[in-house]
Length: 126
Image 1 (tube, rainbow, N blue to C red):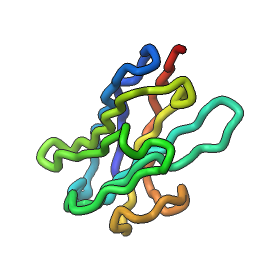
Image 2 (tube, rainbow, N blue to C red; image 1 turned 120 degrees about the horizontal axis):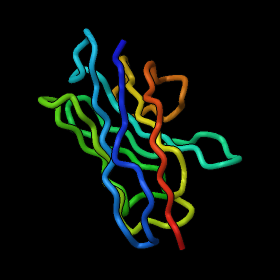
Image 3 (cartoon, rainbow, N blue to C red; image 1 turned 90 degrees about the vertical axis):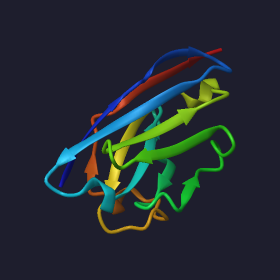
Image 4 (cartoon, one colour; image 1 turned 60 degrees about the horizontal axis):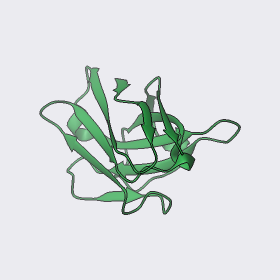
């Protein structure tokens, strides 16, 4: 299993940008995992945001963030990123990084992801 720690959250005005990072550690090879970002807004269920394959060959996004968010990874640094641009108040949520040991980056359901970070708060003011 891999351990994940998110960082980079904070308070930003609508239209602004933030870059989240997720650092992975553990015995298994980070580069073999597909990685994903999820978020949970107050009073709502956790939802898929974006995913990336282990080889960086494929990226997938929720419709709500497509064109605004970009997921990337640096396997040499054991880190996955979420660049968030043109932020909206409805993007306010706790953002979680997650690792999918067996997937190819196409899976979006929470149950497919084996390891989770503790989350980082993103607040977008109007």
